Amino acid sequence: MGNCLNNCGCNDSSNKHLQHKKIYLTLADHTEVTCDVLDIFEVSGQNYIAVLPENSETALLYRLIENEGNPELSNIESDEEYELASKTFLAGIQQDMQ
Image (cartoon, rainbow, N blue to C red; front, side, top):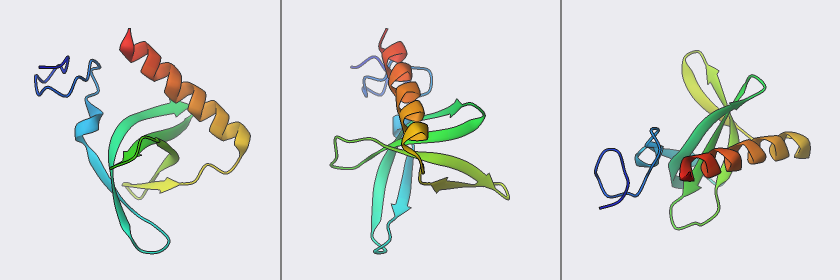
């Protein structure tokens, strides 16, 4: 059994337990990708989401915007914004591992 606070064996040691939440991204070519939600976090008033597509080892970061009560993802447009979101996400992972 892992460190999961829900005793499911997933090895999650945080209180968020988000990897059991899934989202489905529809790509430009209309294919659908299933992703685990790794984290939802805020940087300077903007919400972000980190997801891990199935069969991938690379997390993806998106802006998370609420539109009329519905969550929407949008691409991070600038390198500076991506760097800030990425550093915040990685710092959160390191904190969860301690």
